[in-house]
Image 1: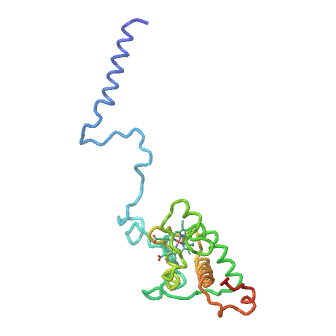
Image 2 (image 1 turned 90 degrees about the horizontal axis):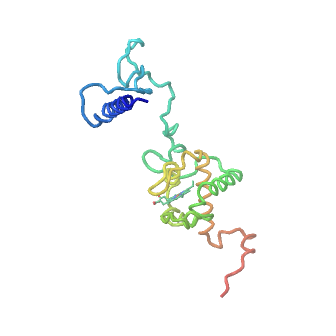
Image 3 (image 1 turned 120 degrees about the vertical axis):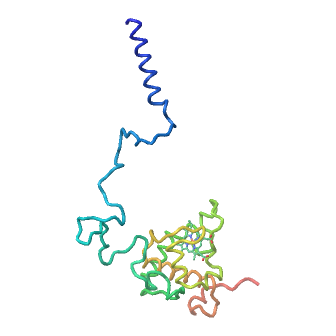
Length: 207
Ligand code: HEC
């Protein structure tokens, strides 16, 4: 290969390098050269812009009746929000029976026990792995907390606790709360409250 081809290609290479890299960082008033425009430019209407296409001249269409914004409760009632007016409400707003209680127990075990522990003492397995702030749900503060506020904590989380609204249906949240109330009762009952048959099974504490 004659030597001049070598010099020619070297000159071209230097030129190309300068042309591409040499102007990096410098400013220009011109539009940038787009080699791969991807999907940067599309035919579309931006929010609030007019359109001739629709009779009322507005490009934005009204949402269909009954549309619910993502993350918003379907209704504004106690069942969906835990609130009565602007205060936390109290009470389980669904029919509770044995099956519902079992469901609550199961959902508690799946969604809550890893952190709050099997009897809600705040001693679940996650605590051993470093989440130090896990609340003890047997604490009187939580025992006397309104059901609606606990509902809201499950739905949206609180401080260092994540939200579980996306994982647990509204019905199941109330069932979990009912079960949590049973757990709290189980740790805070007096002998006289127990049925006779259960009392007989207990051995008195050693003196
Ligand atoms: C990944 C761990 C984790 C899971 C799972 C979890 N929690 Fe919590 N929870 C926490 C932590 C941590 C706190 C303390 C939040 C704070 O005060 O920083 C807390 C606090 C709470 C509180 C007290 C909130 C307050 O007002 O102080 C309630 C009630 C509660 N959790 C209920 C539940 C229920 C019911 C579930 C199951 C649906 C659940 N948590 C699942 C970690 C968890």
